[in-house]
Image (cartoon, rainbow, N blue to C red):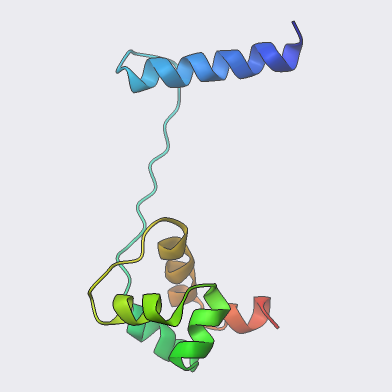
Length: 96
């Protein structure tokens, strides 16, 4: 078998062992993404709800649900919003 295959199988076996709670040599990185205030983040960009929703690739209804607290952004959306919170000009700079 190829080196690539062997390497992939080794990684998959380590992942399975880790998932089963077995001690492995795997290094686990946990990253905490802070909670985000979507309305404040959008306000910091100076964009309307529609323009901001389009700029980050979500439906306006989704943005409204986030801003009104009916839902919370998760995963990549939460990370993107946390990045925009730190640098509101990010949307304009990257999406010109």
